[in-house]
Amino acid sequence: MSKFFGSVDEVTRRLADAGYLPSLDIATAVFLAGHLGKPLLIEGPAGVGKTELAKAVATATKSDLVRLQCYEGIDEARALYEWNHAKQLLRITATDNENWDSTRDHVFTEEFLLARPLLAAIRNPNPTVLLIDELDKADVELEGMLLEVLGDYQVSIPELGTITAVRKPFVLVTSNANRDLSEALKRRCLYLHIDYPTAELERAIVRMKVPELDEAMAESLVTVVGALRELPLRKSPSIAETIDWARTLATLGARNVTGAIVRSTLGVLLKYQSDHRIAIERLGLSGADGKDAAK
Image (cartoon, rainbow, N blue to C red; front, side):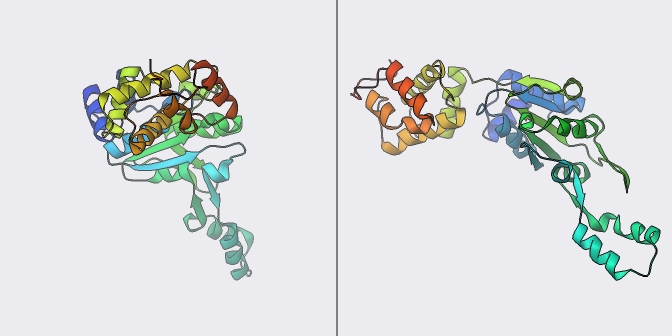
């Protein structure tokens, strides 16, 4: 694996240049993953920046980003590789005078191999960031397939043998922790938990992403978002939704975060009607007056 970063401070600086403000814990974990040659398993609630971290690492290091988006039912043919059966059948039909042993040697070759994200990352000679996203959504069987890739940076194909990485990718595995991942997978990885950022860090993120919003507005906005996250909501606002809300307020030309503004734009932050009802009741937004909601 390429040692992309020379120090923790360099990680912080280069990720910030790529538009991602990491905490010290995040910067340290990224630095160690690169230098120890270990995959980095990142867990935390949805919307705290796990996927964005992988994108930022790829941008900061000028690496190719290969993403495996996990979902229920994903299998080897979608994650590792599969054979081009239609092309194989055409080859078999064209060589019907040959015996099977000879034909098999012809159809199970590189020409007929379709590389999926894991194999594509292993075979890429360029600097590569491999993102295995939302692994907890996939079936447990996929974790078994991943062990060889995460442990040895290789893929075994029965018909061709073992393909070992020419250049080890920087691997990040994300999970929303909706189910426990296997101990075997965790042993192969470094671990990082990302939670919602501190108010100070989130203000800095908002100011970086929406510079037209002044410091006072950013502080009020983050205060309201923090208050919403304390409520028993079905889905708390993510960092991405905080940024969307900041852009919304800037677009509207809002100068204060009033109760009326919060209520009229609540759909940017909360995506369930039940959460709207809770927020309106708990934050005293039912009157939708001009009262400053950040106080």
